[in-house]
Length: 396
Ligand SMILES: Nc1ncnc2c1ncn2[C@@H]1O[C@H](COP(=O)(O)OP(=O)(O)O)[C@@H](O)[C@H]1O
Ligand SMILES: [Mg+2]
Image (tube, rainbow, N blue to C red; front, side, top):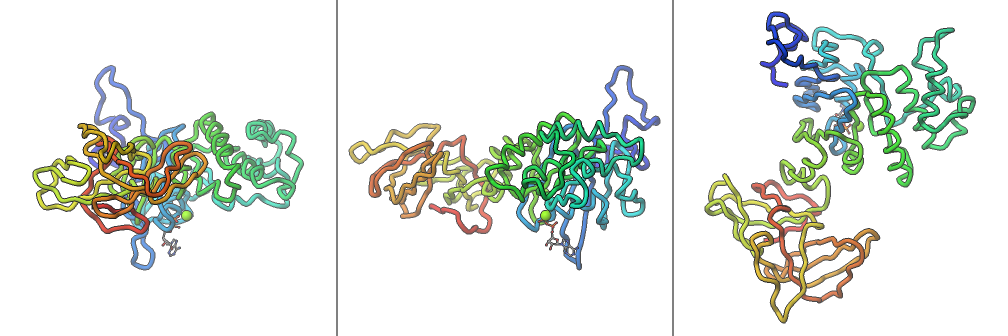
């Protein structure tokens, strides 16, 4: 949210501010469940979280996604209240809970936590673990405990102890424990990373269903794009302390803000070219580069699954089209079957570079086979050149 939208005084959204009266019939905008404004955190003079802003609605799952060390956990720790920002503020339902002057302690924030090492209390039974955050004594709502154990498919597990459970079962107990006090917000830090890969997708889906039923606003931290794509309503892509892009998984994947954002989600192929008259000429034909000044070097980014392949026709490929551009000649260097797809590496005739293409199911052409590759214009991204990155396939 832009600063100028906030009314005078702390926590005053326009609709909540009686000075700015609403016109009759105008819908009252509700503030987000969780809002983080311009958070900054420095350690030893190094800015680790750099002007991070976020807003999450009830029932929405936002994934803070980024490589290890980019500042995700630090952001979460400030929201939880176990670390303190150098600048910025945190708001829940339009009320300030923390800025650099005012601070509600962690235990009064009604924020649930589930961290990577979701350590259950070993000396407490499953039921006692889940009940941990609920009021103690006669008023303790054991029905809520049973309901949650049932919802995570662990009814009957109440009397067991953590060491008697599998990793996946422990994770579900931890989730039930975090949700028992009905937190308005749940912060999850890499909650599935300790689990067996084969179990993860199932547990992710079950967790997501429960979070949606509970209507909790969730901020989930992960370094795994697959996890973010699977769980998130919105992804906030983070790099070096900053949020570089926010959006629905579909949009982030299909309209990455730069080459690194594209490369974070899958392997990419890179084609280089120079812009003249808003166009880049390459062996694959022309690519539009609107608004890019003449002489700028650009990278055309294409994911392996979006390279189009065609057969050789007596030394010629298919005819150029507006959508696919000009086909470029290539020979198969290597083809491997990966289960769901096949990966084919092509050596490009025009510059000897390697481009990688993936094809669904089985496609294993022999090394040396001549084929023609095309790049669909609606499937590639054109960015001004930044520094090269390890593992990229670069063609010119
Ligand atoms: N208490 C601390 N003191 C000094 N540096 C820290 C502290 N906590 C985190 N950092 C540093 O801040 C950076 C971001 O850490 P973190 O937020 O844990 O990253 P992520 O969760 O994205 O992997 C790292 O370089 C880390 O070493
Ligand atoms: Mg972390």
